[in-house]
Amino acid sequence: MKKSKKIILILLIGLSVLYIGVYYKIVFHNNTTVTYSVQVYKIDEGYGYMILDNTKILIKQDHIPSLEKHQLFCNYEDAKKVGTIVAKRLYNKKNPSINKNDLKELSIKLECN
Image (cartoon, rainbow, N blue to C red; front, side, top):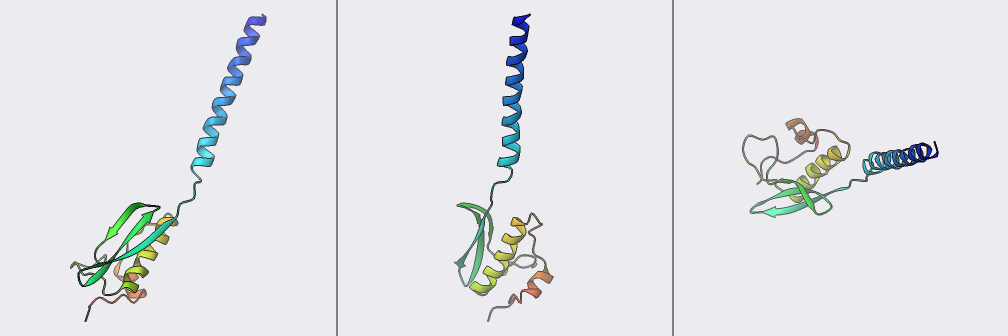
């Protein structure tokens, strides 16, 4: 009888340790802080942007999104505005896509002089 109580005690301790390990992995590893940064870079006669998670490049956008033609951003500020919106959407777990209305609301210059 004492041997079976010992085995049951060992099994309960083992299951408790396993439960705590799984709980820790789910709760603490799924709540990690994610930070995104936007880097604007020069391309030929325009600009593009990158979205980074620490040093990992998540998005590299060489042209203004949602346009039929591949148009570079005319200035640093426009690339930064769009990149910042994309990063915020990623952070909030929303669709990061940019559409023409977004470009209009942000006053993104579509024709460079």
